[in-house]
Length: 562
Image (cartoon, rainbow, N blue to C red):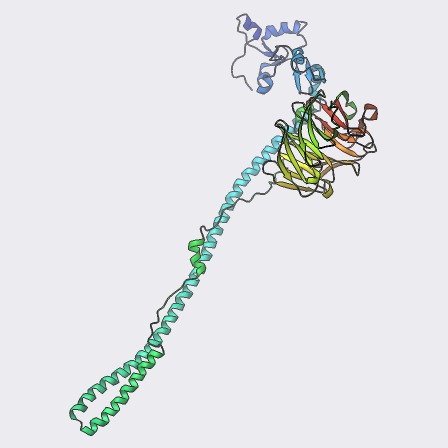
């Protein structure tokens, strides 16, 4: 990539001379012109310095060009490397910020043949894999846009099809109802016309009879009139009976056509508020993308083998003499303070200690019998109360018990990543995953362990009855299972920053380290180091401090440095 502007020789510039730079010295971090580069190669102190063309220098990423060999704080050259904090240090950094770090190494050893290390091809492979992943995801998302367009067309056609079916069906029902109206109207009219015809005939007879009655009274004899009156009386009597019969038979009642539409149809106007509902169905994507390894920077610094792990004894916890405190479990806060869970003759409680072993205070007392504990985040730890079927969250700064999470059976081991709480239900061979945001729970069936630990997306557990150590995915799928004669009654488990699994073995009086792949192990502490019936182990991955609790009376507490 071409330089956006011309670069001038740094050395000539100091003499107010503008000479075009041709190379960049990676050691001195200066631009050099042709003449200065010749002198630069002749000097004893710089003859072995590596130089690169200016064009190649500008082809480097900005974060690489921004990396310098001098400490920004002390303006001294980096000479050491701290594996605890994964950073380069100058000699003054050691005094200022890294006095307690015991893993300082010469920087040249770390950087020696770095480009030939396994990290380079691994990261190059990861970069190519990441690019392929992005390309696959881009293609997938573009296809999803096309798929969504097809789905829109399909669903629109479906809506219109339903509408047409409804229209056709309603038209059919409408025509049937109109036909029924016509039939009923025809029946009514037919009956009325029959009665009308009969009444019309009788009305005409009466009209004729009125005319004849008038002539009779004018021209008939008295005898004829007498007989005629008798006949007319009979006729009018019959006519009256006919009318009475019409009334009694309801033939003259009003018959009105009325249509009552179906209540189901009427309810559409009131109850149906929409033609349908649009929803989005979510399914796992079928993109088989591999996100690559996390924390890849660790590959730039050599990871020790299991045989290179060294343990240095530090001190013990100073429990108040008047308190007969029996340790149960422990954890280490980010600030370095130690939290111990235990019981006395009167109650169970949490105690705080400094990392030098000195006692600080009792945090809280617990009414129910505790089983295990872990750090969550900030100032919060979790404690399982196995007989009470619950876990409680304790604020160690405020010295108070906060939230309570209830379960349906006895809970044993506990671990957390700050957002999720994992609790082992050994009697039912499962782990319950609790979302600490909404307390929702998920069962991971078939996980037969007691004490557990969580590290980089995997769950690690130990079963003291079957003497095994297992590793599981978050889905509950077992990754590996390990068993060894040195591992006898594993009752405590913890991991260091490299993923080595440390197991407290109560019956064999050992702290055994299992490799991260679950294929080998090594005893790093035993009874000769003061390890007697270890009951719990915890490790601060940042400082490498390890705390082991145990003893025949569960009153031993030993601090080590890894």
